[in-house]
Length: 429
Image 1: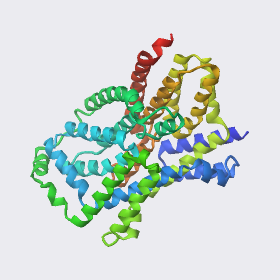
Image 2: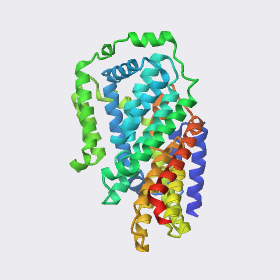
Image 3: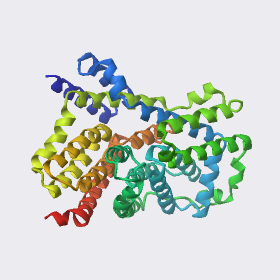
Image 4: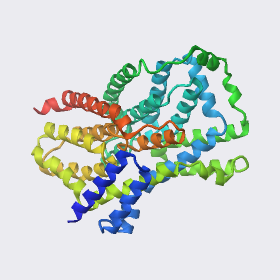
């Protein structure tokens, strides 16, 4: 009976989130509270097991870092400098922003990257007097695609890397990097074709942009030096985190606190906290509780086990089903709990005599990461960009994103299927 209640609460909450009639953070939190009152979750399990405080604190820390750094004029300087390199042309600008996002998402993580990129996008589009929405949507797609390439780019990859000892950073890059590059090129060609007639910049606005001296935005030199230094140190900390043997969240939190201490005279603590996207953070809290309810009653575990049951241990069939099932489900529920449920199931295949599980890990990574592009709540970075866009009065709806996100996900799955088959699975026929 509990599973019916949990599923009903989740579906009703999801319908309201899609409809966007009310604030999505409010709906998600109300749905989470209903899970508590229905007895599906208890407060301890919700707060200690299902709400991923690592993600929440990582987001909070990066929001603080980006907020303080933005006050120095650094993002405006970077935005104008890059835009002048391509003479303010909208399509090359789209490609440049997307490429920066994809590369950053691979070697930092997609959440951190979009928090750094979005202020640049908003500044540039405001200067050129064009809509920021195509650039924001492209940044989301690029962040999820780029994050698929490495062990640290997306949380599912990090979870798989931690569970499978022999898979290293280089393994993820070598095995997932080639198909990620192919998918990125195909999707960017499609996006540029889609927006080819919608992005136009007037000659006057181009001339205004070209006449601006980027250094004019760097007014607060002291704040600039402190914030950029701490931001770079934090970024380096992310890259060398495996060597430090410290959690990514700890690195981000240390960077945020250090910057707040160093800039206390320039930015009061109260002002910094006022700039945090609290609506986005509370949306994640509610979403973790909703998905936690499904996991608590065993729905996610049953889905994972059913995938294995119906393939009867056939490796190619299992890999393809894991790819598509994890991809589709990751578009509608957070991919973290699904991957957490799938990891022990895949490990059990060793008991059935299946010695080479690597194709299944790559299938799970590709499906879970690329599936984040399917819907607006499919990945953390999607929700963050949507929240920042709303704050900047450049909002886009669930359906706006679905029109471009769903086709992107399907194309990505098809290309991934071809790649998996000819690189790994053809030998098992």
